[in-house]
Length: 200
Image 1 (cartoon, rainbow, N blue to C red):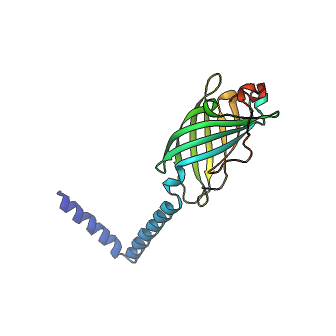
Image 2 (image 1 turned 30 degrees about the vertical axis):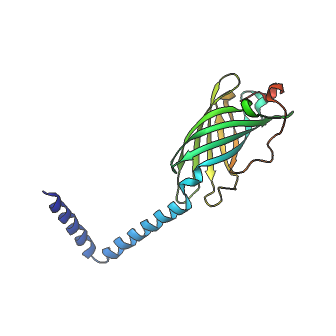
């Protein structure tokens, strides 16, 4: 069967389906709904929402190393995404333990590589899954962040999620947004901090 014969056969099948009762109307309605869902998705979940500079504040809730518990960690992420795949870099810029806060400046910032993927959903929150490989003070560690994205105000909202790090099996919650966190520490060299402020 030639290509033209195949096209004619398909067209005839569609016509036969549409000729029965109101199937044409149902078919047109389905096409319209599919088109509307596509437009809504593309307008409300644009790929540029996932590219640029992001700031995270992670709070440790559990860890096999007690001094880490309750710590707050601050990272700056520079990401590029097509709306699905994410790549970029991270820099750890500060942390706060029970005794003091330390800011990482210049060469003291701990850099990492970021990869990830966006789960773009129609009916519930879109999710950013980020995998970060970071060179700590003593060894390389891996972190995984899952952030639920607020569709219409991601530029300013602090979107919540969770994280896990292989550094002392650390787990906790994370906030992510486009603006710096007011809680970020200023001053204090990390290399002068106590044991409780060692790098994750």
